[in-house]
Amino acid sequence: MQAKQIDYAKEKRKSTLGWAVAILLACFWLVLTLTPFVFMVLNSFRKQFDMLQQGVFHMPDPWYFNNYVEVVTHGFFGYFFRSVLVVAVSLVLMLIIASFAAYPLARMKFRFCGLIYAGIVAMMSVPMHVTLIPIFKLTTDMGIYDSLKSLVGPYVAFALPMSVFILTAFMKTIPKEIEESAEIDGCGRFRNFFMIILPLSKSGLSTLAIYNGVAMWNEFAFANTFLQTPSHKTLPLALNQFKGEHALDIPIILSVLTLSVLPMIILFVIFQDKLVKGMMAGAVKG
Image (cartoon, one colour):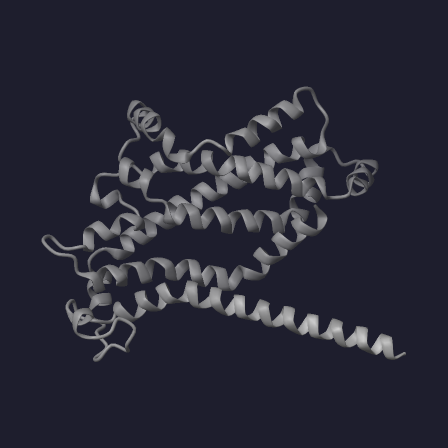
């Protein structure tokens, strides 16, 4: 009895120590990730030279809101809505194509299935920006250079390999008995896909939408290369508009950055449960 009590005490101490280490690491990671955000927000409410006179992590004195007024009144929402349009169209196309590609790879047996899947996985190793010059020439030849349409193709193409890989693995975990029961009731392949597989893959699709949406929202290199007219530029290029002609106005730039990341933070707060469920479902089922 005494030995059991000693073992229980040891296990309790180990558990307490483990939780303490986990909490310390979590706090360290929180501080590490929160510090740049706090720096950005606090200094976006200062005048141009207040950063040199006040501590960068001190509360602004006074709070200067004209930075945001200037950003909003000088075309910020134009950049914002163009980014929303490009990301929305790219995500819809990417999810549709990825779903159509993942379903046969996950649920059907056909010739060269493994080879096709291996080819898709291999495409994940191709660096996105290696193709910048060929895609630039392609968009020029197609006559879509300097338009939002030039971004949709690359965004969809480079999001597809990872998306098909994840979605194929996710669909493989769905029990085949569900599909077989539907086939007995007269469902064909198309109805099975749209009525059974696709709804059951909703959490996986949500995870892919959030993951790829953030990457597309922040993408700079392709947007900077393919868009030249100011009225066509997206949000990541807005910094060039507000940086100043002869000197950098740091608080203005930080105001643009704060407004740029705000939509992603709001979306994550709203849909974080779906993201966590999608990741956990894939981890448990896989």
